[in-house]
Image 1 (cartoon, rainbow, N blue to C red):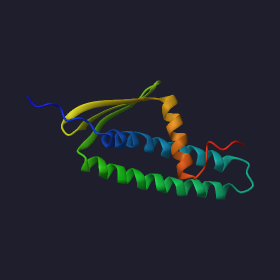
Image 2: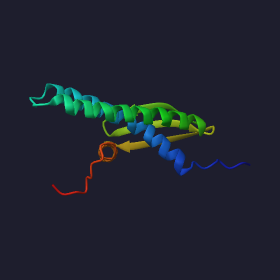
Image 3: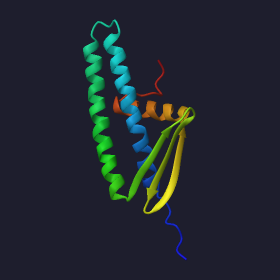
Image 4: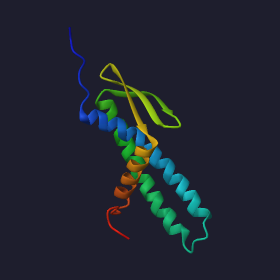
Length: 125
């Protein structure tokens, strides 16, 4: 009897990024709309900066989708619940589940955005 092939760390990371990057795009879109309506002196500069980040995130999402296919991964169901996100996917013919709580998602989104914007979150204000 064959054993189930183990999911690699790369597989897990790809699925996680596939889940988080669309949420990053949602956050950026909402923030750009908020900035557009805020009484700022120069909102265009902030919005354009976020648009540039949005393009980078979109390019990364396209790259992640290609890597998912190359690794034999297919996400076939994603549910956003009150507590978090639940995902069902196939990894080389075997079904797996993945879930993240919103508190962890928020922390990951902050980390992603800080990397895209080159902001050091550890620096004290």
